[in-house]
Image (cartoon, rainbow, N blue to C red; front, side, top):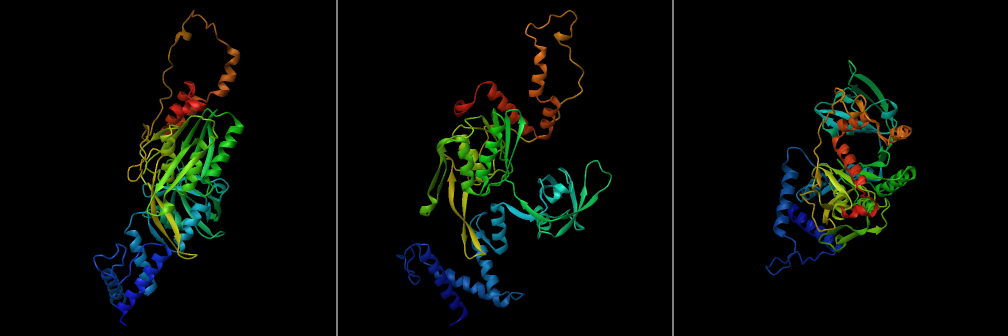
Length: 447
């Protein structure tokens, strides 16, 4: 038996076995008549595949073992389907499990690219980077004497990650310093915090979701509980900007915290288990507090599920710029303990039946990210209170001034927020307006 014939036979057997395991309708491989079932194996294409496999095997400039060639073939099949289906090698599979489980070994930095260099977005609390004094805005010039200029962000991240206990030297440029400085960090186990919360002003909360991990829904619940234990909620900014998505069920749980029942998302695909509808429970944990959701072009997949659900239920105002538009569901199908394929198996739809695929979520209020500078040190204005002989206000209660001052943030604080993040500033301003007009509790559902 020739190699080509052997490969055809083996390939056919593998495909038939795979089809049987997944209960897909296939007719006999030898039946090539026009009446044959549409699922029959294409023998001509299998012969071509086996012939190409053999030509590469015997004639390529460098010898390649059969295992490597077959892995390349698998990758090629999946890459040709769509941008999100992929073959996961042992390393890829491990990275995927790391990103969804919530911890890795590294330095504890959130980073991005700026002018070809890696810029520190924020050091993570209680990590080697934070303990070493790295600050937001620091520019990483070198990693162990390797210039960062010209590297991709992923290449730089790969260099910064490594075994727990190993060290790496970073050369840092910082605004205000005359020359770069070096710092040596020892890698440690870093928890990936997908949820963070803080108060923007009394009563107005900020909840940031960086990505959707297995426990993100539970973490959002804990964050909301902590906030409400501290003080009453007047409004919430839910920040999903630059959130690439993640675990589908986590997005459903997050949306459930803000909804009082109803559909969150539903999926449609060829297989029976791809036809799924996810519903919220009848319990809005925020008691209907007004919500503004921030999105941008980096908000994808699970982020769009949450934004789309809250938008369709008129539960939140969506603000920012149009989202990425990834409306497909990928299923991880393990091939062994170390390898798997990531296969697109369904499309998801918002409660009103909108497909996000290649379109994205359009914000209710479009606000581009911009650099805004508030005017300061203007000439003092003259008002009635400055005029000689003016009448005092009959309702003036000077004794309340201190109490009011304690509750009102300084103007310089708001100006700093405007300069640092104009989208967040606009979201806070809108929440204040909704609160003043009485759009709270159940009233917010009719916005």
